[in-house]
Length: 311
Image 1: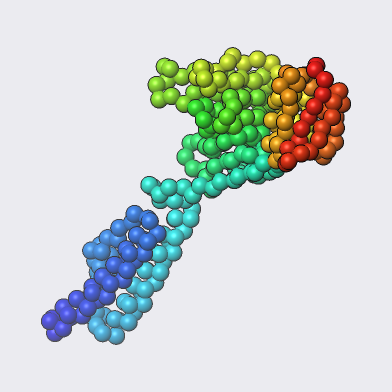
Image 2: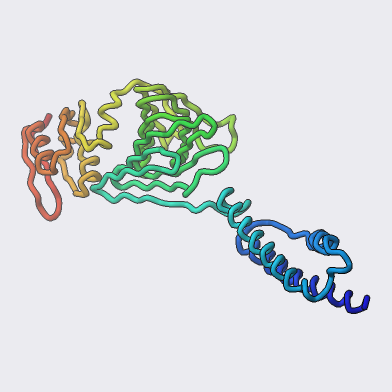
């Protein structure tokens, strides 16, 4: 009799082993590091059954109980995975938004931060912010309205420069072929270089209506200086606002914003342009510029050519 009981117990343990092994495999598929305590579970199950009831008619009950235990364990693991996000060591899913020339796009990040991406720009950001910071990477130009969260600083990575805020609105222009500028509309912004040696980093604190410029050639950040922020961030509302801007700079912005090519003679590049227009068509904008330089424009071989008198 004792021998039969021993065989029954071995059979039960064998069944439970199979269930637990399968559960352990499922936990690995979910990338969750969880270990089942087999011996403890066996002991709890077997000790709860007295000698009189340890017979074959309860084998089915044990199988059902083990099945329920397995189902509950897997469900719990799935819940924990969804609740806690990716398992330790698992990389976060990264998203990327690209904007071509001639377009402006807005998007809202998972924390409520609103980002306006200017033409020919790219933003990389995680599907979900975890840890003690909110970090994104920018190439091109963007206007940020960062959702306030004092426990999680928002950091924008650009070429050789980081910009850190808690909650504010500001503009970053970081095109690959231009120097980097950071312009603050509201709140406070910290700008610092990407250098491992903190002693060599330059850091600047910006307040509203101020800008800093990072010169890539000299690898240095200017001191904050006052600017007209309305002029510099008008683009995200699809407005044209130039206040004594060089025509060469204006032409470069029009090329990017309207996805066209513009040619201007050398003697006109330093002409100063002042104009204000609300979401103008390309034709209207070029006509205004032509009048300002006392000239005209024509379209030839895929290029808009501006000509005029010396200014």
